[in-house]
Image 1 (tube, rainbow, N blue to C red):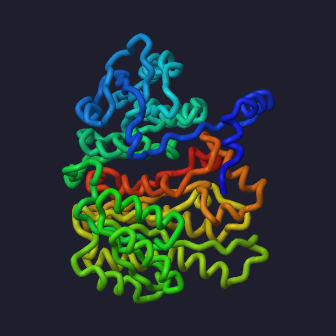
Image 2: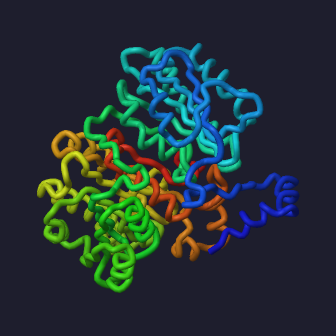
Image 3: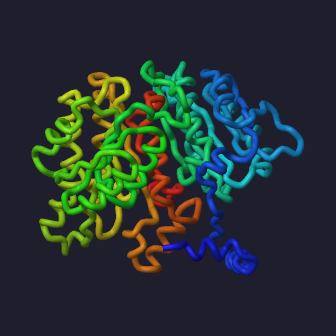
Length: 442
């Protein structure tokens, strides 16, 4: 269903009325397209204190002209502030001094990325300064408006190269609906630089569950655009739809019940040559307040959304189906699993469980199998399901984020594609919210 309010605010009368009433004024987002694949303007690279990562070479490859000092009259599409060496309160003033005079020179849809370091438990001054950057960035993302976003990347020493795929994603239109995120990057020996950054998944095999429609179909389409060979999985009842998606993308359809005890074995058997990317997208809702929720509604949601993910992941890792070094597992959590939601105790429990899975499994999967494990947590995404939500609830879902609008399935898909890239080996154990910086759950 089209967002008529967003369209109204772009008209003269709409701008006048919304300004007078103090209503949200969302801006149309610049998403990736073949016609506009990059942001419109240069990147300004600033340093607050001493750097510990030397990101200049990576930023020079990010696709935007780089300035290292402000130029009169320039309008910046991105600002990157290197605060990795910030170790005290005085260094925070340098962050302020760098960004304060620049904010009025940002283009619409601009990106602000602050580079930080992990808080040091042995140095409370450094820990205080680095944690302060998180509050700063989250607040800035809620202030700057006009489709602009802000992020904090916490870089481990010697991890500038491993951050390249993340910087390319955040400094591009592909991250249009991702804002206010804090993302950790580790140095990664297995972060493979693709031969073609426009097709980083060339030669890779990706399996997407729940691929027949909605977000799953968008994920499959995006991974295919980036070069992946697709295996599209869905339940037998959706066979016609999932085959249509697979055929359109030149992929393979696989129909099975993901909750079946032998689902993992059947997936492994269908992939004798191995798998690079496993996207756990399949999910259901069976909403009721807990006092009115029948046991079968609880059981079915927990089984599809969480138990099946645990079972199939365990089997595919144990079987060696996921390839060492390039193996990427991306699961789908939800804002509901972070903030909770009335009438969704079952769904929120299942999605919070996904977050627990990622945080626990990621370090062990990397060490034992050479595989990364991450999750996306979508907020209000415009799908057929959300189009059926009552009007006032739908409007609240759209407006209760810093960008003032709902996201699109492609926003989730682009985020998954970044996490799935062989160049994203330094991103592990992260839960990235695709929610326009929802006002719920931070």
